[in-house]
Amino acid sequence: MHLAAVWLLRYLVVMCLLLHSFVLMTFCFHHAATTCSKRCYCSETENGGKMMRCSNLQLTEIPEDIPNDTRHVYLDFNLITAVPSNAFASLTHLVELDLSHNEISHLEPGAFRGLGSSLQFLDLSSNKLVNFNSDAFEGLRARANLTNNPWLCDCNLQMALPRVDLEPASLTGIVCQTSDPEDIGVKGLAFLLEPEIDLCALMKRTTDVAMLVVMFGWFTMVISYLVYYVRANQEDARRHLEYLKSLPSRQGKSEDSSTISTVV
Image 1 (tube, helix red, strand yellow):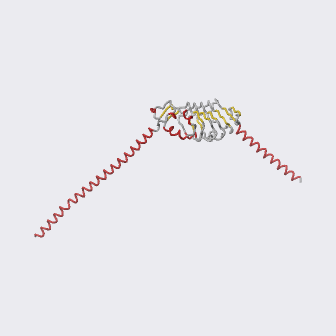
Image 2: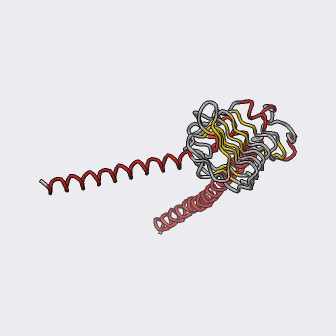
Image 3: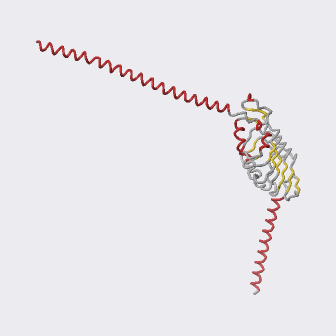
């Protein structure tokens, strides 16, 4: 009886320790998921969730420890140069994201993946974005501020714009600082407001010229072969004709010989 009580006591102690460990781990995971990113300031929003402000902290990359329940993130006035793929994929409640006044020049494909159903406003103004990558805005339907970026207006931009689901008014913030070709006259203009300008015309003309050159090359080869074939056959025909011309003379000589033999 005493041995059974000892075993029961040990079993209860082990179970208590396991339960305590489980509770501690759960608390740690929850704490890691909801604790504010270091150096940033966090506060609770009126609608629940967090507001995290990391403005003007000289950050060079997106923090990886943003709480999962964050609804508003402010990363403005930092030194961030790029937004990697899936940078905010775990922030399924994010409503507002401010990345303005940074050094961002590259948005990787899927940079804002996972925010399509929640994000309402994205601020990318006053950065160094030159090329518009539609894959970076995959599934995003938010209103975006894209002003004050050195946008290059070219055929790639013209082909990329129809593939994004951003609010149409957002794209008016793409003002051409440079263009390709340079003399098309779109510098300083909001590209979306110039629908009659075709930046792919030069590429189309280049493609057409290339096709004409290829077709001319093939045509030249065919003509050259036909000329060679005709000349070769003319030579054979000439030889054959000469041979045929030589046949009657030989036949005449044979008849003359036969006549002389008969007379003799």
